[in-house]
Amino acid sequence: MKHFINLDDLSEQVLTQIIDRAIVLKKQHKAGEINETLKNKTLAMIFDKSSTRTRVSFEAGMAQLGGHALFLSDRDIQLGRGEPIKDSAIVISSMVDAIMMRISSHEAINTFALHGCVPIINALSDESHPCQLLADMMTYKEHKGSIKGRAVAWIGDGNNMCHTYMQAAKAFGFTLNIATPKGYEPNQKFVDRYKAHIKLFNDAKQACENVDLVVTDVWASMGQEAEQIKRELAFKDFQVDETLMSGAKTDAAFMHCLPAHRGEEVAAEVIDGKQSLVWDEAENRLHAQKSLLLHLLS
Ligand code: CP
Ligand code: NVA
Image (tube, rainbow, N blue to C red; front, side):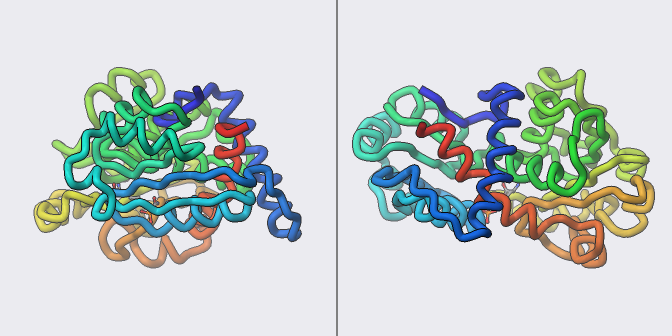
């Protein structure tokens, strides 16, 4: 059974194949070619958090591949009323061909994989966001070529996206400079596991020096709304603005998984400027996940 719960569930070779196929699928889709490889297949999409890109890309992607996607909010299904995760996994997986989960608890996703009988896709947990990294790596490749041997700066919170960039640094062979305020470093388990591929900083400028790509994310992730004010203070020197970008290589790219808060983690002049790849990055969620679905379901 193939799952996609952690980026490194798949080898570098398979990840590269998925990305290269995504680039082909994008061209075919834009040329109007029909690909109904997933005809009669159903994807269940379980959400306990909000989403724009993830929901739209998986739902549109399944439709484009001839299949069907079911949007299941935890407010509507019995899981949200306390039906055990194991029971939900057995029942839902007996009726569909794959399950995509945006569930806070990474452990709950693992439990689904343990008891279900279809591929499980992590569509963002408190720990990681592997689908986003497929799109990010695809976007970098389209615009700049191979990321192997390059330097990437992660600026801001040591959160789920940061953890997945750490996994990507190992899988795709780049160096990751991580700049966080003190107390907001990535989880120690990830630091220990990926230490050969990362460098930790508490200074955003130092982390950006001469890098090929600068990436950031919101200061308060979903579920941390109550910490917004405290975080705004803690992260005030970690905004990606033109001064910070000027320390990176002149042709460096900027990425953000979105949604973004202009004036907080990123200045409008950067996210809306020439170095920003965020719109392609968002669109590529569609193409990368179609390629992932084809890999998991064929
Ligand atoms: N980047 C991302 O996962 O966006 P959504 O929260 O809108 O799905
Ligand atoms: N770190 C953010 C990513 C959103 C796509 C969050 O978890 O809310």
